[in-house]
Image (cartoon, rainbow, N blue to C red; front, side, top):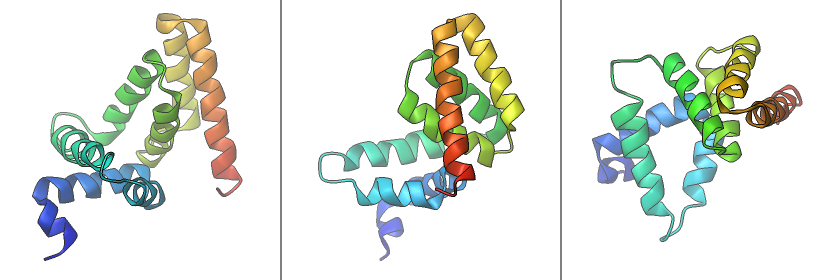
Length: 132
């Protein structure tokens, strides 16, 4: 029995979505770095967030990315924001659209939050353009 079969259909579906949005490299690093303490969180995120929520039919992935960016910015979660900026690009958002999201964040969450979003996004763009 493969590991995916042992973990079940929810995990397998969530893992496929997670890989599609965030990329294999990130997901492989996250799973490989999990230990007995952190594995339950990896499993929860994969099954609940990436299967139960991201695979619901009510919104497309592009729309879910827009929502995630705004919520992560409002919650001041720069590590997750960086990750989901990459995911949003994978889901078809453009740099210009990301800029619009972050301008709206500035208007509703405060200019410092908007500035942080632009800073984090610029780091992601440099990483992507630099090939890392």
